[in-house]
Figure (cartoon, rainbow over the protein chains, first blue to last red):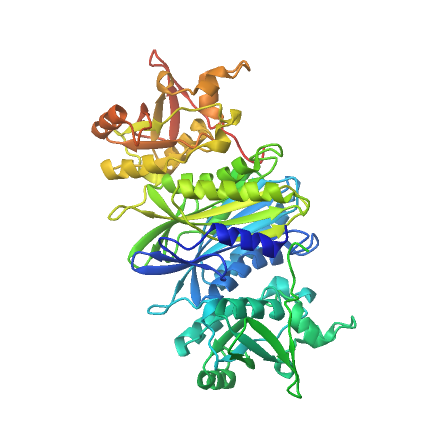
Length: 304
Length: 304
């Protein structure tokens, strides 16, 4: 079963109900707790899929927690508590285990989120880490969903995209400060973090919102690592499809967009890469001449 | 690194802080959310460790969620939302994946907890499932910790113990209804679910509470499966050490204990197996003649 089929199957099994406002299909679930609202997300990282056996264990631990903090940030929420589960082969040396834990701890400290619990087990297979992070919107704010993009809004992205496999995918800083600054200063319509690649994640956002996203090819911020990749693919192609950027893609009004692009968010540059149009769901790439072509989801699928 | 060493190491790295009231070392973490309190627990199950390749996938899915619901129940709390992460080899047939998901869904329905989200990934190794459950105490109640046992209280256990490997470890019903009835009717001092075996889990409770638990050997409820085990070990030995019983061990006043033993909890029999004494931490086994011997933790350690 392919990953998207599996997710669709699970989603049909699990409709929102009771205190669950938003379930599978967003960056995190939205759950009512009495008068409060929390968000909850879980991510599983597997050696050989999300990191390599030779990657430094400290970086692996960092990434394991950071991916979930990034999901919480994409809801416009602040990470409140994290729990971690680790499956280890019995022959993993103690110093590698300590480095792994130190990486988890460093990512938790950087995100100001306490490690609240965990589970450890043996395995005969690859190192596997599941991080789960509970978060809260800022006081008086609602979680920002994928479904709130509206025609007329501008489409913005933090940082630059592509080439993350050169190292950034392991050592990225989740855009929590940027997300919290955004919801303090503006009213984002929709937001998602870029884990599968801009072309795929834009499609997620377009589908959940029922809109068309128009992405201007010459505005996509291509990272230095993507430009440096000497593999026959353009920097733009890397930026659209590499994935694991962990930047934020979001929509705001054109007025708010102008201020955000001018000032950045928490020190991070922000680029207006396009706009939300009626119809869809669809994602189109617009070239410098104004010609449009469909941009199919071509991001990194984890079961590949 | 042995599992207990690893847990100790992580615990030292992660002291309670901020909105985290109780962290690593209880069945679930206790987290403040504004005026509300939630509990959060995570459990990772690995093929070949917690279940076998030949176990029915539906039972495996059931168990994966049920173990976390059991942890939440042991806090005297009701499961509110669950998230699940699954790592699958690409060659697992679709019908086995569907059965696994059906088992997860059935356990969620039985516990009245919505599946709020999840993650799926490929792996080159054994099937690995992480379930994380968020729970809430009943209105006006506090979570029941491992640390609240006090001398003079009675020590009680639900159901019967031992022999779970004969099948019950896969198909148990978490004692959520029993736990919620308990906190409605009585004021438990401390509670834990029996995952590692009575001798080990009693020791966890004694250590966190700083007390001595006196367990009467002739009162321990030995399961039929434990009595039927024809392996030269006594039924009592199985009941003390097999683990994966997923029954509740708790302390209440002697007055409350008498009523609970008489009436059971939510239809499940409850046995008074001993009492809480000063000093410790220690766990002692008391025989029919009143002779005492220390009961060392000999439960199932997952990395073994």
